[in-house]
Length: 361
Image (cartoon, rainbow, N blue to C red):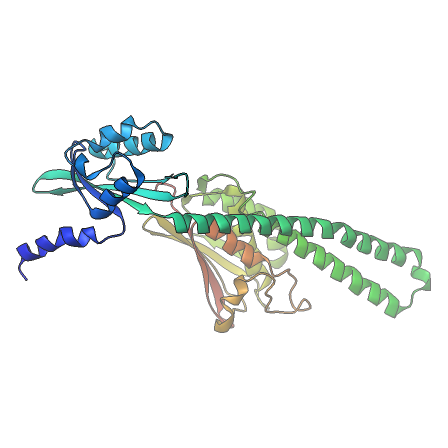
């Protein structure tokens, strides 16, 4: 088939698309609309009808009195004036009998030395409703986790307090076994309280996080190293870092992220003194930050499981911990639009890497 024959297929192909599609000239005049655009105008009795070809889309949009129409007009105007190349905007388009949501996307393109704008309206009602259901479900889950965790803390504290009171008041009458039993019970209650605190923190990542700002990771690391100063001195740890970037994020949550990863590196160092290094590499609009250690490592089959809530690879007798630290790291990274993973071999150490958005994107 010749190139000319292929060009003849394009309008027919665009007419089959289930999206409302139009082409405008560099002044906003409507040059072409596909069948879905035309049918949408007819079904909803709005001004974007087939006979509007030749009229100005920007003028039509500006005449509408809704806030959504004004936002769309402003974005399209910026494309026509060259202030931006692409504009996207989600908006409701409800009728008395149905609630629907659309995504408007407008983008400029040039052909034969002339500028044009392609405008498409995608029906995202299904996606929008699913997102809202998911958000409501997550909100209910977070509320449940908070209430359940908060209500569990008080009876746990009471158990711990009475066990310790029992030990102090009747210490002369308790044999070694009884003291050991009380010690086990107190330890278990304290570990459960720590798990509840971790669960509370985990459940609040989305709902109680701060807004994003430009965050200097060098400053974040300095704060974390100060907080871990005693632990670093006690273990004679050596922590080195290449220059770290400025990213877009929540400073408080990024400190949690760095602190959990460094605490892990210190804890799972094995018999040798901890040796930890940090580095960062630019990858497009993101930074890949890595925390590497020379510790006991992780079996390949467990590299995904370590990020699950309450999943521990070692007993409490071997290593302390709640099993929430790495899952919290993943939740923080995901809130920042990134991902986290680990490369490790048993006895060879581990490298935890994660992506964060660059501050200048």
